[in-house]
Image (tube, rainbow, N blue to C red):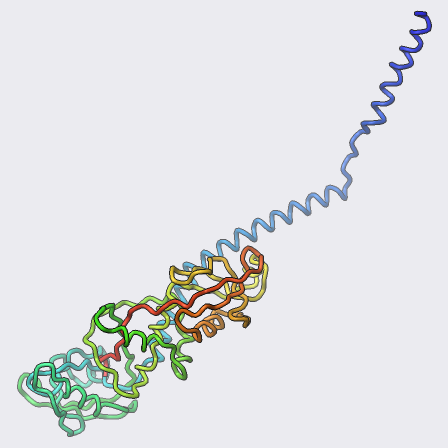
Length: 345
């Protein structure tokens, strides 16, 4: 019996290694093609990581450099657009009659002609300035503005003035003077004026509005209010008032490399949405506003400026490379009062 079991045990023992070898073949050494594919995949991963880092750096650069440069370009362009012929003086009422010069624009026409702050204007080209002489009486200022209206660059004016009780005359050559736009946060009963000045302008205002980028910063200075004359173009151009409506909404055009990172070659990148513009998030790429395609920040502002306060606007965006639609409510204009400035004339 034992002699029969021994050959059987040997047979089983010899068979087991044969089965194990058949179930676990030796691993195949990687070929040259395998090594090349792995190297290519690693290189692609490194390129993607580097592109992501460059895109993040570019966004930071847009936020800290391009937008700052754009802000100054916008302010300079707006100031240039607001310039018009004048003599460069700030007018104020005078209890003794005439118009007191409260300030003179440095290197302006009046300054070059020798006029000083404190002088009292009494005539323009021999025509007396009427009115004034009482507390709160601005009729003399109105008279002077009428005589100094519709001036032409290069035009010469004989300005009669009084200084320290003595009369004098200065020959002033009219030149372009930058107008000053002033805002105040006074509450008072200015709601009606605020709404009127916050309405979107048409015509020349629409052209000027394209120069204004959201987020523009203005140093506020308190200056005595001056009423807007009927038909005064400055009163029909509440450009900065409308810019404050979208304060905090910073947009940037997509550059090709930046576009590849966000997954599109068209649209407008949202750098920041601000507290008043809900629905949009930094990193969103605006594709359409109200169904119309946008390619530049100017396109976006052109479509937004035609909307009224409280209106709901559908904005199609690309967020994390996925298409989605958000609803943006047009914010109300801040309670800022705009004055047609007394300075400079």
